[in-house]
Image 1 (cartoon, rainbow, N blue to C red):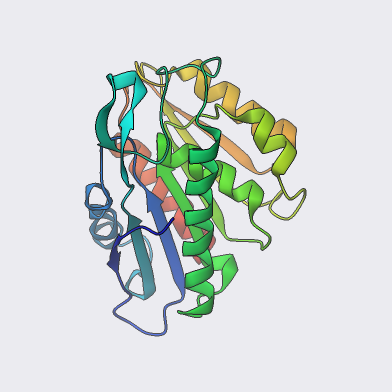
Image 2: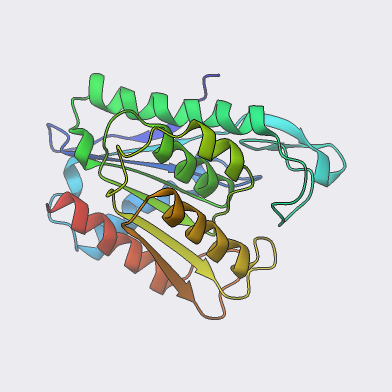
Length: 231
């Protein structure tokens, strides 16, 4: 499966880092493309003009939980907010392959060092990003998971590539009043990946935040990105 993407290339070459941010259900790459401007405006990352940004667009598919309504999505959802529901395993891992391909592209086409590539996403995008980190056969710089979850833990466990990214930094953020992906579901996801072996995962709670992000969370994300790019 190939997808289109919003791309914002580094204006100071060569590109020294790359951020690939995967949107959530019903959104598009343009829905997160403001992230490049946010990073620039914070002035926290001196080399921000040397970052490649990729914001991929999910295909439009029928969503079972929305009565079959066609929406941009990385995989079908049969029931919102629970790991116990039937899962679209094939669709999920096809999207993981898309993200793996975008990582490979940054390395092979743009010569970005693998340890300066950060993958991440929101909701469905966070779920895809966390799982993809377990499947990569190269070590990357980091992973960002906002309002994320894992409904396919058994399949991730059986497919993951063991210890390649076990010490890769992971930023997981979740609002305490999220009505779509319950806060406890986010915490369970965090504990699952830690148990799997990812020892550098830090879970951040954001009081009063629903299924969205807050200014505090976004600044924390930029600081996380800085910590990887500045290494």
